[in-house]
Length: 436
Ligand SMILES: *Cc1c(COP(=O)(O)O)cnc(C)c1O
Image 1 (cartoon, protein in one colour):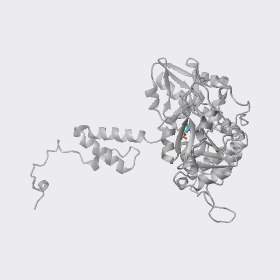
Image 2 (tube, protein in one colour; image 1 turned 135 degrees about the horizontal axis):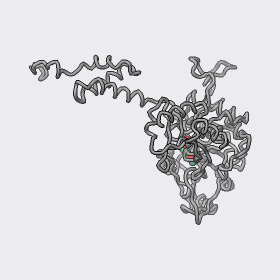
Image 3 (tube, protein in one colour; image 1 turned 45 degrees about the vertical axis):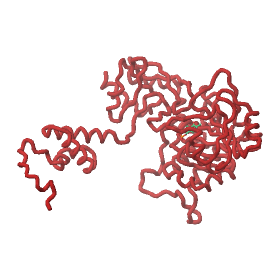
Image 4 (spheres, protein in one colour; image 1 turned 180 degrees about the vertical axis):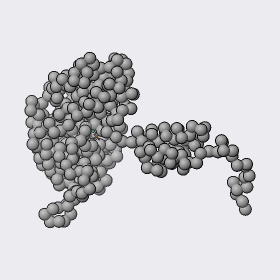
């Protein structure tokens, strides 16, 4: 029996109304730099959406749009050093990557046998922050989840009500806690928590851990009282400090001029561990200045329990991330902050930025304020210099190759040079010239 389609006997379409062949259209836009199947998709959408006479232009627009929307490198001229929309911290160059070679990821070069991916970069990271041991997972959220699951599944974890934080992107301590299987034991109040509150909660409960969470992205001011992570060390249970932002050492030995004033009060990994905290977790791509990763560092027996948990396999990082962290740890150990993009940009003297801004345009050079960003150091501003152009021109700047990402402040477009690599000053100059 014939299907309804086959029995249809419409007259053939006249040449003008016949839809252009999808395949012919896809070939007509072959100059757009996309693989053929994606050009066919664009052609199909164009054919489906209206007038055949303009289908080729529509197909070209759709395909061009898709080509531009692919992941690409951009010039961050926002002055936000750790910009969540641009991958937070930029990576260091990876020597040896980009070649077609394999990686020694899990190869023991001495024995030729299988080794552990957690041996190289994590060992250097531990050395860098004075920890007995360290391991790397996919991000800090994963680090907290794994530590809680491995150390406190089915048991209590005491944490201050003032530290039940939400980090952007849906990381909420109470939810992570429940996913890990640990029982949240809230202590104190939103604005005031005392050591005695922890002692009471531990008394008579099966408590596996005391958790301290860094208020990375908010402040509580006024009538407040809180207990620092290092003051939890006498409670008789292991202390886990989720530091998040991951400042390695408050002395910043990798910076020629020592710690910048805007870091004041930011807890550091080394000092937190020295104060007796058993385990810390922190991000790779915040103040550490590396790729997206989460680091668990501290007592070797606790790190080993995390590494042995089944979730560790699901949360493990790949060789790109581990290679990048290895370079980063070597740079920290060599006290070479200038090779770490985040620290180089964060500490460029204002005079140098002013010189660069004037070289691009004396008329447009203006003082600006940069920020650390990335959910760290709320309220902190870092004096900076950039270019100021009247009106909102940020959308036009985004259309360049590479796109320049600027921001609008008080009705002006601000191009902040603190977050721009000097070798991109020419890109900025060209983009500005196109606008003015
Ligand atoms: C940022 C942050 C996290 C989450 O880190 P990701 O690496 O983004 O997963 C967790 N805890 C604290 C305290 C943070 O600041």
